[in-house]
Amino acid sequence: MSRLINHFNRYKFVLSELVKKGIVLRYRRSYLGVFWSLLEPLLTSIVLYFVFSAVLGRGGTPEHQLMTYGQLTFMVYILSGRLLYSFYNQTTKECTRVIRINASLIKKVHIPKYLFPLSHMIFNYILFLISLIVLIVVGGALMIFSNQPLPTARILLSIIPLTNLILFAWGSSLILATLGTFFRDLEYLWNVFMTLMFYACAIFYPINKIQTSNYPWVAYIMKANPLYCIITNFRQCIAGNGNFIYKTTKAGDVLASVQFNYLYALYALGTSLVLILIGAIIFRKNEDKFILYV
Image (cartoon, rainbow, N blue to C red; front, side, top):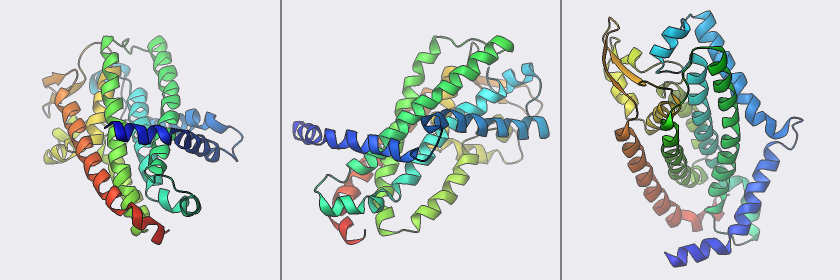
């Protein structure tokens, strides 16, 4: 373990430079720069809110929203899910080609190749943390001008889903960085998969809508998605007093409710650690071959 730590410390300056480079390149031709990290999720959430609330009438009254979306207004429900999904989507999508886009550096300098997917994950996570400012501002405004309850001490538990999120992204990134180097079509297939993942994470609808539908088995498939579990636990943390997940009958009667799902947290953590182990093994086994395919 000490050998690994010493090896990492030896190249931590390179990692910091790669992180800075990633942030600069992301916004080098943008007038608004990092401000887009705040504006993009807000605009996307407004569009989703308008489509599903104003056009399709899914939002309902404020009282209905607080019941349906677990003490969260529809806007905060969408925004919180969209932010976490966007981080995972952006990180993993970039890591499918991260080795290839750094080919010139890999061929010239000896650098541990795991630094490339790691740097992408870190600077995307930094931008994600900045984007949480939007959630704080929007949530605070809705607490003032609507009936949304204030957060409780449960908000401190948000460190659990946020930690699970970065672990899950790291495990996925190692695997995708390896496979994406050998199979370039993976980049396009992953984009299609992440579109499916967007709907499987219940970004704009509550899970009880699936549980009370004619296909309740779909809800069990969704719950097997670690990203859904992470997003749900994060929403539970920022929700106000009362419960978050409601299991209801088709008539709308509440059968059970949950404030924070520790089983979701343990499942997401376990899945993430397994992915990290698998990713580390296949990455370490194949990294010497990367130079032949870039």
